[in-house]
Image (cartoon, rainbow, N blue to C red):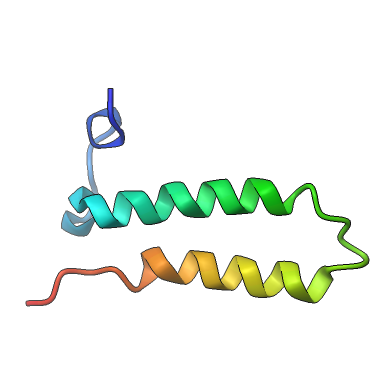
Length: 63
């Protein structure tokens, strides 16, 4: 069962394949960042979190 079949969508853009891929990428990267030592790479982790989350946040259909 694909991500689109798992739940009902609240917003129409959640049906977009590109948005779903962006969410999958964000999940992967955020899980990967949890393995980084926070005290040494704090700034890098913050920048990566912001970058990967902005992909889905800026993926909306144009009217």
